[in-house]
Image (cartoon, rainbow, N blue to C red; front, top):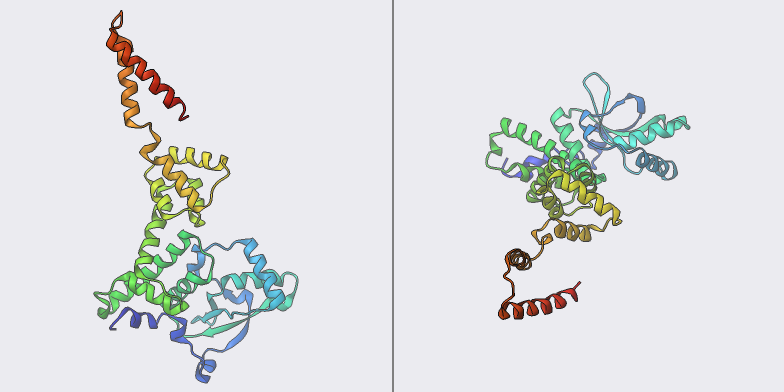
Length: 302
């Protein structure tokens, strides 16, 4: 293989299917009992939100199934879902009230290896589902594991960066461009969210409501301080993404302390008050009067 793009071809639906008559014969669309289709274990990393499944079910009831799920035929004759777990869940929900939904049309592929199946699953989900930050990273990490297996069996992949091969697989699968650098940044950000943020901030970050800058600033703050900031942020009604970044920057920067010049002046005045001479020399009186005038000016800043 001469490039990441070549490596990706065997791991995309486009690489398996085309619109030819031969493809339609080899990979037919058939109605299958929903109960006969196994979920792919790799799908466990993705959320199957019940409300979202309910909305999808209503859409299917109203408009029909607009995107045919992809299943693979297993050696024992059973079927395993590759792309379409949420659609399968929606059909199961609809079948509770209408038995006509007990069977679902699926594109059936045979001869798909375990490695191809898991790679197809994660690549398809990358853009076609509303993934959280950590779910998206889980998808690309799983692709990375498959790429490493490919690398061990194919010397032609040596010298190709793993993230570039992952990016090509996703781009070929979805038709949408993504770079290896973007994948690396997303995985690094997800790692910080998972390991370095308090529970409250982790949830917000995972929903994509925190900028990467905000996540990194928070990760440098102790958990107890993160929790205190989260309470304050919530009490103030929360902010949009940009304003939240500004809030965290103000709250975590050294600028939250008083200006160093003011703190030095305060310390020196305290020292003077603890050891001043009496009666006050005239020069000291003049300086105190000047300081009092400055204090009035400072008071107007409040």
